Length: 116
Image (cartoon, rainbow, N blue to C red; front, side, top):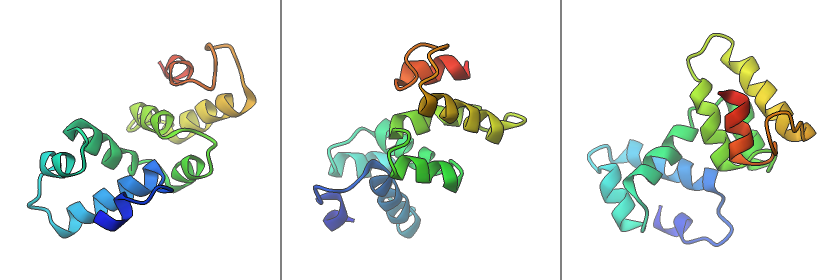
């Protein structure tokens, strides 16, 4: 984990996967301890792990830059809703097409407005 987190080319999703793998191997280590060791907040560590609950195809959109890590995290507000996958696809579609009906679609605020 140490080696991966010091890479300069690591993406936020790779950091999240690294943290999740470490947590799986060492479940006794708390998020707060991971955060302190890597100069993060516990909330940041928790949010990074949460984004991994997105469907694989949406994680792929983060990896390819279609949506940002923060926008991916916002999509999780749809989790558990009926038709959540279609709602996520619609929100991401608005980002790609630049649909400005909810404000500037390429911002987290625009995505939040389209979701809520």
